[in-house]
Image (cartoon, rainbow, N blue to C red):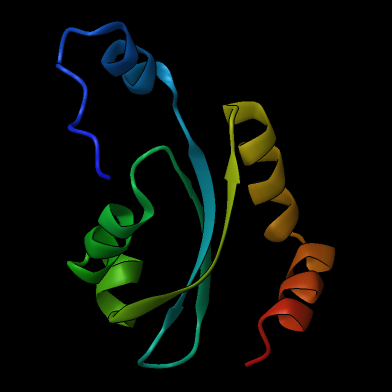
Length: 101
């Protein structure tokens, strides 16, 4: 049985709004196979759409993209730390084993 969503001013609705999820994601260009590691507090599909719309010069030149990997964190500090690691040599090596090209 499905339950109706909580009322907008209910304690449950307020608690849900206060929980913030941080995502470290990897997208891959369908044009040339280049990968981008990013971090966001937005829904990851929203961020993917921004990249596919060409949110910056690099994205415009390498779009379209597909999401190939994501990890979720409950705090920004851990997510940013993971993003920095995945952009390092060891992090790229790890990603290549998890997501073969």
